[in-house]
Picture 1 (cartoon, rainbow, N blue to C red):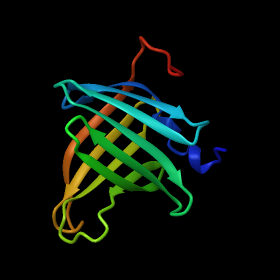
Picture 2 (picture 1 turned 120 degrees about the horizontal axis):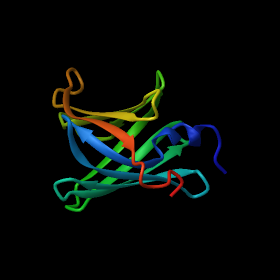
Picture 3 (picture 1 turned 180 degrees about the horizontal axis):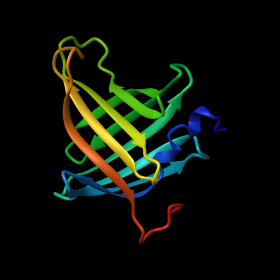
Length: 146
């Protein structure tokens, strides 16, 4: 059964056009599944990339987790939670030192859009570089509850 923690990422549910640097970067459809206990993202990039993520609240860690995989088999495991109204998830690389770290922040905007900032660090998190800064707007030609 979904509780309050399971609902913290519901602002990302919808069918979105994603833009970065003023251009369409892709299409993202995020749906609530398993009676509200998880979110499933379907990503289609404007340049042919495709991927999916499964997002769920992990009560054992008291954190949100995302498992992402793309059509080339690249994968990413993230963990985190709400910080100042934004969902912030960072890569989980237990046992690996000096590895590239990833941090993705989703921020809901007052107009119903969502900003996603993907950052990477190669110095253990001492500094971060923006890899992607996307703006999600709801597609008007589809139903939000799709």
